[in-house]
Structures are given as structure tokens and as C-alpha cells.
Length: 147
Image 1 (spheres, rainbow, N blue to C red):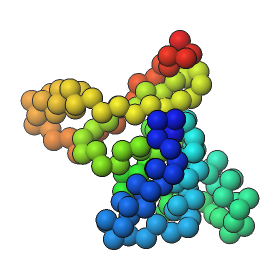
Image 2 (cartoon, helix red, strand yellow):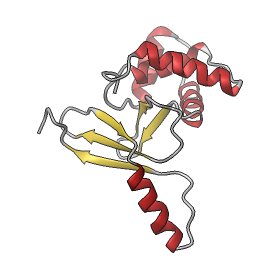
Image 3 (cartoon, rainbow, N blue to C red):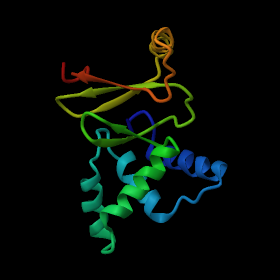
């Protein structure tokens, strides 16, 4: 995802989002975000822990998971359920559901915001008296380069 959005721009947006929300973008939170945003594919929590441990001897799983929870809550990252990994969100201000296209060959993850899907799912859910609070659609396949 970083090919369309520079790491610097994503960091600036993340810092601004934290400032707007009145929360601290601590050094650990920032570094976890950088590690995730620096990858075009999903990053697993223990990979983040391994990388952090090389920089901070005190890095432990709870530290990483607290940072991940913080970043998820602010919408700065997404959890890829099928891979149990995390990917940076290039546009944290989006209000609706999103879709992730995940290449099974190279691991590249691309984020989409197709309102038609969100509207269709809202309509179907309402027919059943269900109100959607969170929506993540993962599309697994091959990207253009690997196809």
C-alpha cells in the first residue's frame, strides 16, 4: 500500500489524527505504525515484536498488542483476519466499510472503498433487522503483476 502513499505522508496523517483525537502518539506507537506502514503486505504481531526487540530490549508482547489496539481504534491500521496480520490504512478518515484485496502470491494488500458493496450489505442486513457496526471484506486472489 505504501507505493501509492509515502511513509512520510502516512506518518504525518497519523500524527495529525492523534492530535485531533487528543491522544499521544508515543515513540512505541509510532514505531509500530512505521513498521506496518513500511510494508506492502500484512505484518504479524510477532514479526513486529521481533523487529522492536532489536531496537528496544524491553519490548514485550503486551507492549506490541497495546500499540496495535491503539492504532486499530484510531483507524490507522486494519487487521487482516485471514492472515492474522496488520496493514496500514492510507486513508484513516474514511467513514464506511472497506475491502482488502490480498495477493496470495506476492502478499501485496490493496485497500478499496467501494460504496456499492457497503450500501448493498447495509440493505441486506436491514432486511434481517441487523445493523452493521464494522465491516471488513477480504478478497483473496492474484494481483495484476502476479496474474
